[in-house]
Length: 221
Image 1 (cartoon, rainbow, N blue to C red):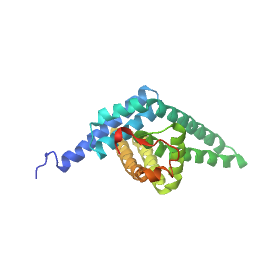
Image 2 (cartoon, helix red, strand yellow):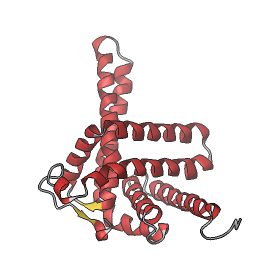
Image 3 (cartoon, rainbow, N blue to C red):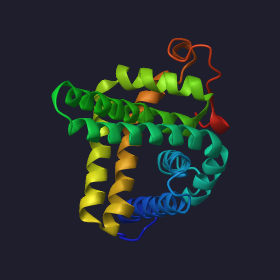
Image 4 (spheres, rainbow, N blue to C red):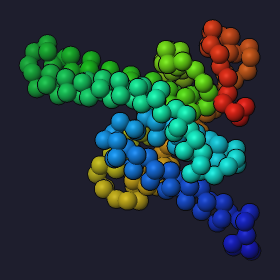
């Protein structure tokens, strides 16, 4: 057995782990230095790099990350800033209303449902943005449709995200931050990519993505 051969399992999976660590590091650095504002663009770039590098075997993870980050910085940042503000508002309101008595406490669940809804939409928003060029209004609308049409996939990704956040907050380990979270993004992308690829034919573009210039970036697909 040639343990260190280029085509060996050790080299293949070791390369994947190394790329995930690098991509996680990039997301963490950008998020910290931009005080959280750059998270949307960085996670979009990470998804693009995973798709391009690991799935398609095209290019290098770091270069693909930078390419997508530059290309989607403005659009991803606007979407993330608004989403983060709504999530923060929902969490704050749910906390305040949860401490109230009577009927007001019921509204806490409404605000929690708002948070879940936003996360569901973002599950498809950033992967779609990473792969295609589409205006923000259509992107959000399509993500909303996909999130509810493919509810099982949405719930699967939501559970993965929840577990990743929990492990990161509870264990405080570099392994969790730079590996487990990366594996979570990788698994989510596998699930979401399978959903998105169902709509990458001309006939299906006319049904779900109506009146949309649905053009794959760089003819990747």
